[in-house]
Length: 475
Image 1 (cartoon, rainbow, N blue to C red):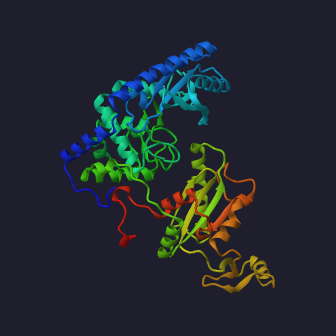
Image 2 (cartoon, rainbow, N blue to C red):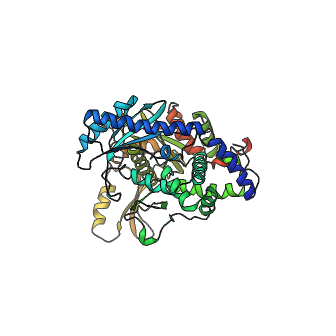
Image 3 (tube, one colour):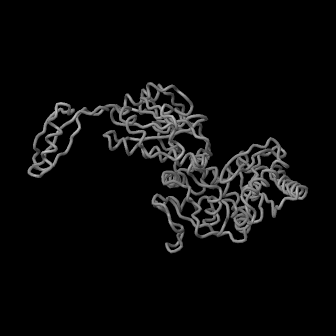
């Protein structure tokens, strides 16, 4: 992207931009025809495999963007749903779903979400074969994917070639600003949510016009229709039309919704094709980060943990919980974080914290009882002992209470964290069985790695993505 926002433009400018981008991101007629043929063939092959196996398959269908043509020309996964009777036990559901997936897909690889599913290839396309239940009521699903046929029917009835174009534009815009995808890693806008928003507002342009006026939390419903038990940090509420008790936007973070609101206004003021370009992340090495914190006069400490064998949607919430617990402890220990970030690679979890200073004073204030009460004797006896780690006192403060100043053992941020780490409340699967597997070090002592660099970029290179990079004089 350019380092300077595009010039202000009119609705006509926006229309020309959106027409040009639509032509670039739309699948070709040949690809659409090929996907339609593959969808039909996949279902036929699965039904044949189920018949040959005597499997209790009720229905197989391809749903999602591949079925509705709302995918982008450079981003397509085909979702094949294998639906079984509601009374089928879970272990049998897994067994039958995986068996049918293996019967039709090449290079099958077992992956895990709520239950195992297969990712493989079919005629050159990546396909996820996901088992679920053929429920009759979308408001009472037995698994996370059971609403899918109802989503498919709802959107198919309402989408037109014009809305499909607007959906693709919206997806590409959200990709470019980094908020597309409802995975726990991203905490962004799901494809289903994009389609519902366009069905509701009509066009990409109309959606952004509304979005620039939003204030978090956003409620796209009447208060008495809000899903129950909403978390306190909810960003946007949009009930699922096939299950009004479910918030479609539950995965969206306040941070990412805030980014979308700002981007909506900025795009409408200055439309340009640059808004739809996927920018490569800036390169930031460990030495770059060390130079930045020297200029900032701060300190970065790095906590690394072994990565547990969990799928991302289970892992990332636990890592964020651990990050918040560490940040709260740092604040209590007089190292209030200026910011923190996380990253996960193949074997390690990284949590990095920027604090104002690397050391705290050796002095710790210890409050005592008011003069004249019975506990004064015990307090004086304790703190006049020759073994007491006393720096000053006991003495009487202005309010009439006793106090002493003691010597702290842990003075650096790393010493403090090592001391408290065993009692911190981390995610259920994050606490390693061997404490030696946890490292807590200043950034200068940590070896450079891909995961560390991702976390450092998130911590020290924060900037609205459409503003580009600052000039060297501002860095």
